[in-house]
Image (cartoon, rainbow, N blue to C red):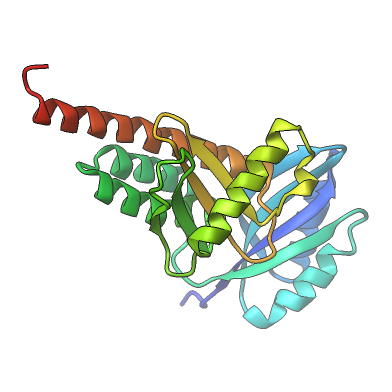
Length: 231
């Protein structure tokens, strides 16, 4: 009989040097942990930010595991979270999300769908689709936990102004990320509590926004043709 295991995602900083990840894996093995997934989120300045998916025979070992990992020179643990649902393959999740989005047959359905899928694929507590084109549409779709329209619009205005003067990323809230849908005059905004969005996650968000933007333009063209069949 196979004993029940508990699964955790551990996000950590570690030196971007040969052998560092092996040392971490060895420490995890020392507390009977099993590394079943690795995601490299960012590499810069001799440091890497990785997420390791670890199975433990007993959830009470997680504190011991974190202490063991921190013994590796140069390693800092940023976040530990329990995986309460079945473990997903992030690449398969992304493909399934794209398939759902390109298959949406109306605008409202597409925007509702991206709120659901962006939360899972990129990782967020809340998601919103916001007008940035000055058409007065405000927030077109959002989670119940998303901030209000005034906060979202102020955040986007500040972020866009900072980009124009090329202020560094450190000037922004790192636990909120956004990507424009330039063909649609919208923005996709994601947020979570205290865990920064890393380079790979921001690229995922940008790719998701491009899929949504393309599908929105297709839907708008189809609606225009339906209204004006002779054009």
